[in-house]
Amino acid sequence: MGEVMHNDDVAVSEGLARTLIDSQFPDYAGLALRRLPSAGTVNVIFRLGPRLTVRFPRRVSDTNANRAALEREAARAAEFADQSPVVAPRPVGIGTPAHGYPMAWSIQTWLSGSTASPTATADSTEFARDLADLISALRTTPTRGRVFTGHGRGGDLRSHDDWVETCLSNSEHLLDVPALRRLWSRLRTTPRDRPDHMTHGDLIPGNLLVADGRLVGVLDTGGFGPADPSLDLVAAWHLLGDRARDPFRDALDCDDTEWDRGKAWAFQQAAGAAWYYEVTNHDMHEMGMTTLHRLLASEE
Image (cartoon, rainbow, N blue to C red; front, side, top):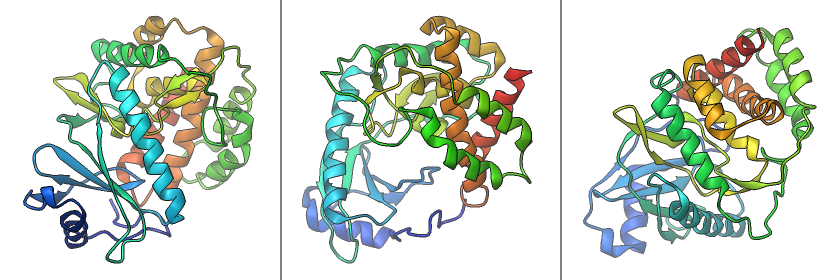
């Protein structure tokens, strides 16, 4: 996996991380620090001592907006951790720009477990039910009047047409693009008949932890919020094969409309991952390719 994933990446060395932590959180100055290998595309992540992780945003953004975003993420992560049937990180603190690093950064609790993959537990019905139990629990969280806002995943499928076409135009050497265009044309108009529910919003392999083939933890929970409830169904395509996908669907009692919208969200995410990360992030590229192949096979 390449060190640089985006044109606006910010370099974060272990020495810089150590300086920022020691100067702003002196209680943690004596704790061991090491950078973690990660398929993550948003943060550079370090483990701090036995119980903490430190996350440094890797893309340049407005300082005030960055701080506000981390504060929102901390509140959402705490809400998620209270609701999730498996453990999730809890916020510990937010650091400030200093020593040449231009943005706010955060400290969270550490979770044990191995990162999931697109194929390792693909045939496990137990893992499929764990995923369904997680999504069911999140959906019971009251929205308290909150609704989806913005232009990301979770709103109008058709608003992603331009992005999907960009991805497919850059994927001619990777995939059966004519077949994928036909599939997107069908999925993008799938109607929606359910209101917003609370969703994780990014149930990809890299955000799930497993042990002994079971789901034991969930990462990157700062996006917890209201959205199309079909959004979390991407897990069916990013993580499950044919054998386990039916028990997952049955546990969530998905009708054809909800199921197709879940396929559409998985398509939108995978199309970007397969092309954009082809060189810079093997794990994300593999997820994108695996998911798109599964989606095409399901149509056959």
